[in-house]
Image 1 (tube, one colour):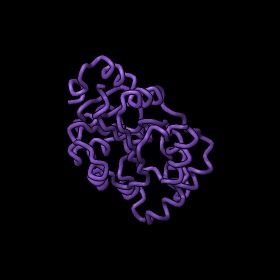
Image 2 (image 1 turned 180 degrees about the vertical axis):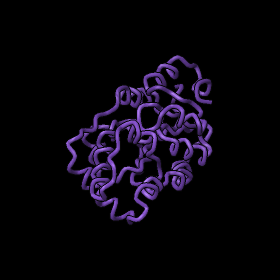
Image 3 (image 1 turned 135 degrees about the horizontal axis):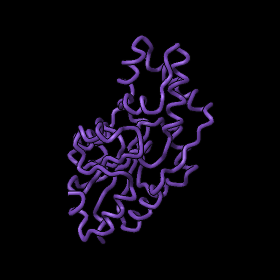
Image 4 (image 1 turned 60 degrees about the horizontal axis):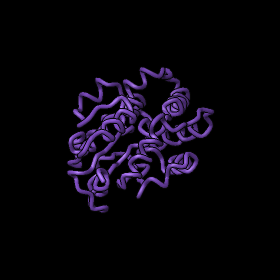
Length: 218
């Protein structure tokens, strides 16, 4: 089968689920506490980056990160914003599952919130293992590849931010940037992903037509 030897590492936020409104809401909760201007959606997308401690050091350099995280998580918890699965994400995961591909998650989202979302959205059964609460994904990618015996020549990291693409580069694996989340096209283009896609439906169509997935990914 075309996909059985491929390994897929997914970011979570902006790649498989749409939590952008929730994250902006929680971020603005933090900004109000410190009497800073709140973020509009597009300005946030152009400014937010991972690791997120860099973002907060720029905008609230005088505040301890643990203190900020406490306020952010409270804002996250009290927000009324919902987090749906992104269009085409469930279909894409089911497609890969049908191809016997191995799948993992590597996310900076706090473990508790991630655990709640993956259970509520009923996506957990697709993944061999998940890694959440990872501040800098570049520091874990090598460990994940080694622990699970993943062949870098058949492993791809799918994400929506430059940090995801840079993590793939760091791990010596392929990368796919999807334009469904936090970064704009020109921002993702700047870090040269292997593939740049509008969404996972486009990716599935490409893979579905290919005799060998290396023709698409490699």
